[in-house]
Image 1 (cartoon, protein in one colour):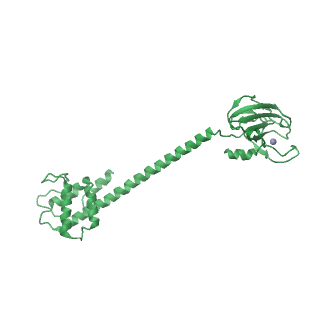
Image 2: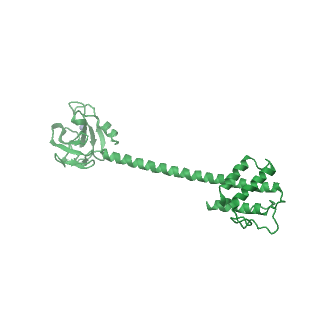
Image 3: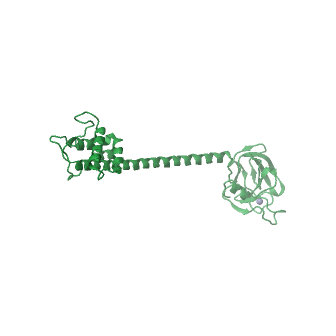
Length: 283
Ligand SMILES: [Zn+2]
């Protein structure tokens, strides 16, 4: 901002003739007050412009100039240098055209400067808007994250796996279509709770082998099967991602894996793959 003001008061280019009264002060010595009257310069300039407009006609004092003068008046600080040099040194006999030119030149320059200030102001406001938008986005993403945690985010049940059997697959191993999703990984690999919940059942269950049932907060049952070891007991509260057992090959299997079932409300199983996608996971 300081640079703008400094440039505004820079000396005019050489070659522009500005009459001076004998002994008049030079424009390089701006003063806030009229040297004779001691009054602020603004009314003087406004008066001079009025005279110029009245005497000189429309050639240099059109509507656009009037606007510029208006802007000049609204910014006293910008008045000091030109006001003093132009109007203090112009005597009664000075040529009106020159006076008008001086007024026009200063008015236009100040109008340009004001336009530049307006652009700067716009840029600042634009940056403020962008910053506010960024902050709003940040707050939204934090809310989303908080909502996710509150909603009891799901976790994958094990690591280093590949899927070997999908929900609904049929085959010799099962009397019905496959009721879960099989995550095949090395024996002993930790099995972790899919989400927060309570362990409701553990133990050996025929073709399931070692099985653990967890009831989630929304009533959905998650069944984990074929464990080599079970690390929890009925009544245990677990949180998503907490270790509850180890991958094994107990029950009716051809290799080590954890068989996971998703049973909303403890009823019939649904496709765990779809359920995990729904809960933001990519099995
Ligand atoms: Zn299975």
